[in-house]
Length: 258
Ligand code: DAK
Image (cartoon, rainbow, N blue to C red; front, side, top):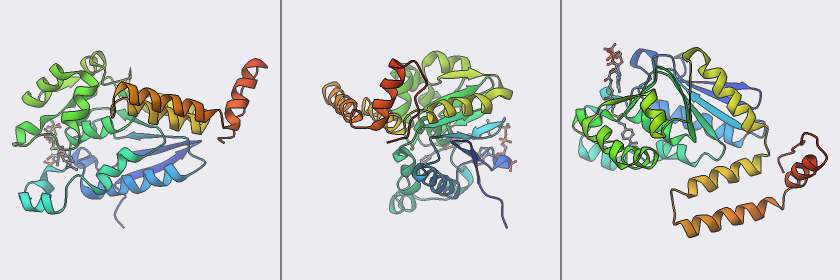
């Protein structure tokens, strides 16, 4: 039996997903993305999981979409298959928080995959880039849209047009990366962050994620209204009562995720 392309593990209330094509620096084939989407959807539906971590290995988070597979495709192949839909697109609809734990290369589709996650914790050896221009194409999985939202137009244009890589210092300074940690502590730190998230009340975590994402989808007035309505809605949960009562009573809340 062939080894799975994505290793799936559970650590407490955290779902851990590890890209597993080390020989090709975790190049993202359709089969990898399908396995990933299936596993993420299962964690999303699992009451015992509160957050996920997506990682690769020390050398590569993912060095991009699989160039070998794409090399022969024609315009009609990608157009007819609508190469962006399906499982690739499904990843942005995951409702529980997903942390990308990035060491080594996160290039092309790999950088885009990290940006589809909710935030990035990066190891000191991480390198980010959108080198598609070197292959005669452009980013096709959100790189021209999510990267400028994360780092601003100037740096996004620089990276997309020159195809150069950005080290982790530059990536953190530019706002692409939330935290930088030593390589050997990457997984531990990412799982610890995910555990903290998973210990909160799930409805509030999910509405917080939805509300922050709304900032990139809509006008300020619409997004504020969306935030207010979610805030109001949380007063309908038992966990809001418990969270506020626990604060007043100077104890830890015992959330029931309802
Ligand atoms: N695809 C396939 N194989 C890859 C690969 C990739 N992206 N990246 C690396 N490999 C393979 C290499 O071919 C090599 O295989 P063997 O020769 O050993 O068989 C092995 O991984 C080790 O790589 P290297 O020997 O090159 O390792 P080095 O340390 O020397 O160099 C490198 C590391 C990351 C600098 C280099 O491998 C490299 O430049 N890789 C390509 C990076 C790149 O151009 N990435 C962008 C690809 S285009 C979309 C979804 C996604 C996308 C677009 C649309 N839709 C859903 C619409 C995304 C597109 C892309 O990502």
